[in-house]
Image (cartoon, rainbow, N blue to C red; front, side):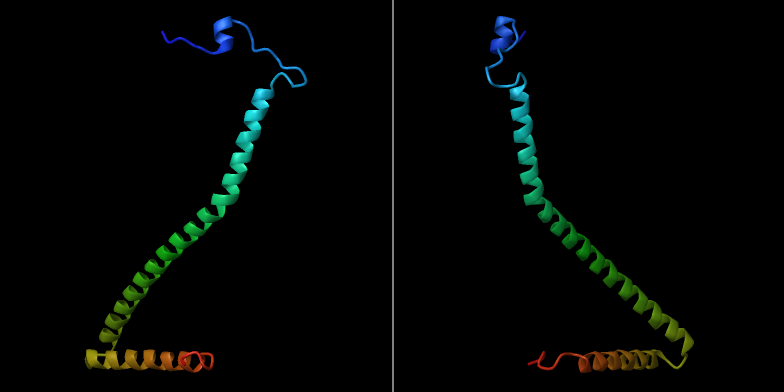
Length: 116
């Protein structure tokens, strides 16, 4: 059996209350220290946790969007290949022209001096 060396356990009596202090001052002090440490933790690591979650979920979203775009383009090429029986070169020509047109439109909308 392990011995308990605390003063209350060795004397068999309750701890003596100090004058000018409430009887449960030790519990109040521990609660105050715990609350202060908890507030510091929330204020310091709380924003870091939110930022790291945003970065992780953003990266996952970008990866999933990239995969979805690739699958969509594969499906579009196969659909156009079935719809246009002349050959795959015509599908590539149509999609190349479409993407080139979108690129030229976006290039014309860029701010002046952005490419300098």
